[in-house]
Length: 158
Image 1 (cartoon, helix red, strand yellow):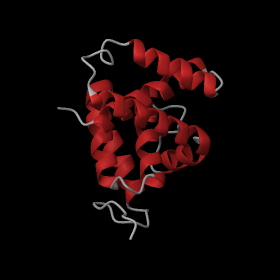
Image 2 (cartoon, rainbow, N blue to C red):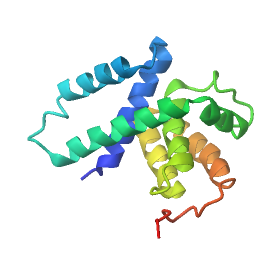
Image 3 (cartoon, rainbow, N blue to C red):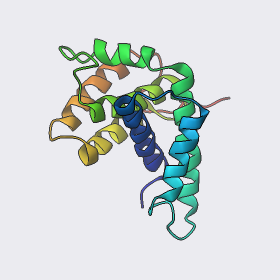
Image 4 (cartoon, rainbow, N blue to C red):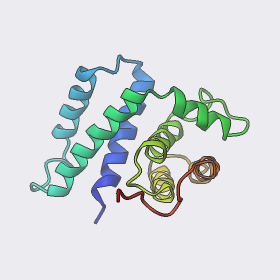
């Protein structure tokens, strides 16, 4: 069974993908419209699965956090560690999968960076090209190595 956070990451990537393609204004209305789209999907309508409700809440939290913090800091890091690729030249799917993972690495201390990377690679296998998983893995591992926190442990409040 897929963990609710996987769904949340995928839905967040899809929201960001729409944001990139349509260049719409990311407002509360945009999040509400996307939320309405999610609720209308066949997946969300599966027999009242609590995992999907948790995923929905997590996706809204991730989207809100990314929009609140902006993608500038995230995009700057991705571009810095992607060698020859500018953010605009990257595949839209790849760019948005990495945005979710980098946001988690920077702002979600309850998620170990290695988990964010592994999830991004898996989502890349599903939605990206054959080159996506290795590209994402390389960029995100480089970013992980610059972080001032353990790669394999969640930060717990003591």
